[in-house]
Length: 136
Image 1 (tube, rainbow, N blue to C red):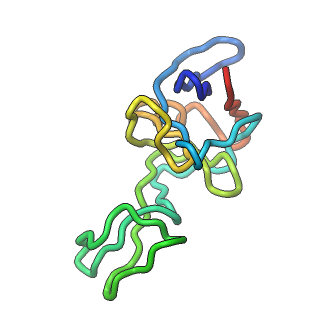
Image 2: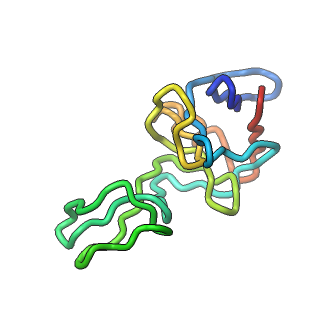
Image 3: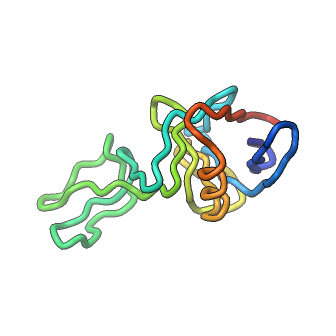
């Protein structure tokens, strides 16, 4: 993965078989770099840190919250943001998943991909697959 180019490259051997746009971590929430690996795969993962406070009927009362910082309003509970086609890359929970792609680093540290891109990477990887992230 190239942080400066905001691109992910799916490699089979020495060949790039697919590439696509990403959005990595924004300033203060930079994505980890180096030689990582897929630690876990979850097709329907939800964040345990970022999401919304929702009421009993599922209506969002307060959106875009951090479970670490924000307090739940009375009568609400935390609903983690969906992270479809999640590939965990760190023990702290950073991974690759479907997300908004504004064309620049914008995430809380995860590497966002298009729905098609995330599904392709999900299908072609297994736990233990190496993932290189850096200034490529």
